[in-house]
Amino acid sequence: MRRTKKKKQARRKPARTQREVLCDVMLSAAECETWLTLQELASLTQYGEASISAQLRNLRKPRYGGFLLEKRRREADQVMRREVGVVWEYKLRRMIRRRILTRAVVRGMSAAVFHPVAC
Image (cartoon, rainbow, N blue to C red; front, side):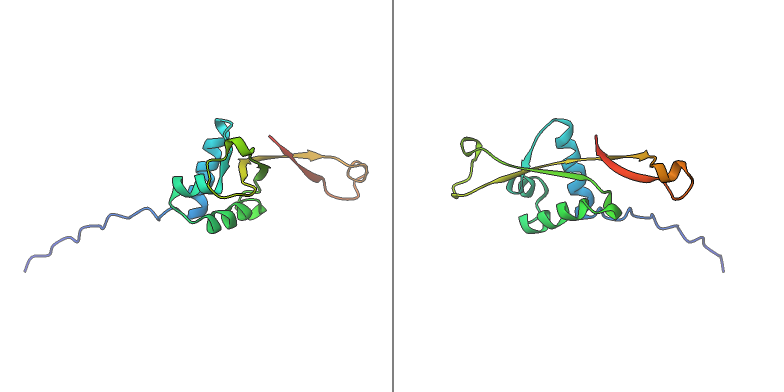
């Protein structure tokens, strides 16, 4: 009998998470200085508005990037919705962490304090 070599199976890349997709879309929009509503994000990503809102909230957490999420009310003449009410639009930005030395650090009493600064 002849031995045959087993073919190596091609490894698939893990599917991107909803949070990663949403983060990429929001950062791309931020480069263009574009604000997006939940409805616009839903049409771009094919995810539900409620889950998009939850993922935007997650992106603010330090373990998911600690992004700065800006929110503002969209003006009534810009709204393309049939519904009446307030429509919010969002913009995501990266945070820059700068090291600020306090008097205690200079004296050697404690560690440096990090203060987030928006880019």
